[in-house]
Picture 1 (cartoon, rainbow, N blue to C red):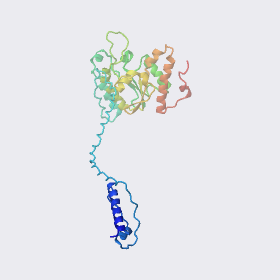
Picture 2: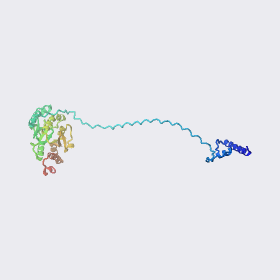
Picture 3: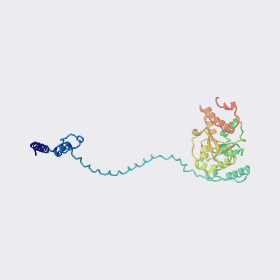
Picture 4: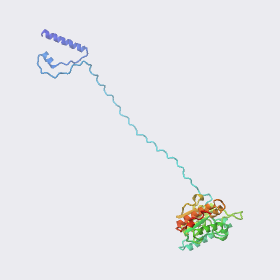
Length: 320
């Protein structure tokens, strides 16, 4: 081995020792260099990447195991809100003294007159109210056309009606007769009846009348219902609060329903003031106004029946 080669080899080893002391573990050597050292020609190779003395990168840390997500239970649906309490509609019970009676059966006879005669006899023989039976003179069944298209319903007979056996013959009856005449009709063309067929007794009184009690009306109204079913009028006119209470079966404030069409078992019903109320208001400042209100209700009944209405009739009770 020549001295030059030995010196080169020693220098190389010394250089590698320095590199090793510096932490280098691998030294790339080009093929030409190896060939020169070995004395064997080789084909030139691609130039390697330059030598880097940077510390080798630290190995990437192993990935930490990821715990499987815990299943999340579905949310518990909130209970539906409780409905707000609704106050029940007030129920107005009938007065405790009211006893609801079964309706009077209409006679099966095909002839209306015969059926009416039979119904009248049953009413004349009625003794269901001992207090009325003891004080009455006679039963006031009703009067007028048994096939009338217009029927008036009052509350009960007064002293004059009890004496004559016919409804609306006293001062209030005379007022009603004038109203019917102003409509272009007569008492014989309409039918007039009452909720009660007997005059309410007035113990301890020598004169005057009283309104019927709810019990008395409940006992007697089946006779009126049977009359209405036999007549089957096209229009009913109820005269006063007691007449309305008897027909509907509960108290009624007449000022709240007067002039408004109602329905009674399929028949148009017009509530208005009782003629006795009109008489009491005649002396008051608003007497004419009350009379006009009643007349307007009767005009509505005429229109419902298709009766002719003249200009003169339309202007009744508008001025003194």
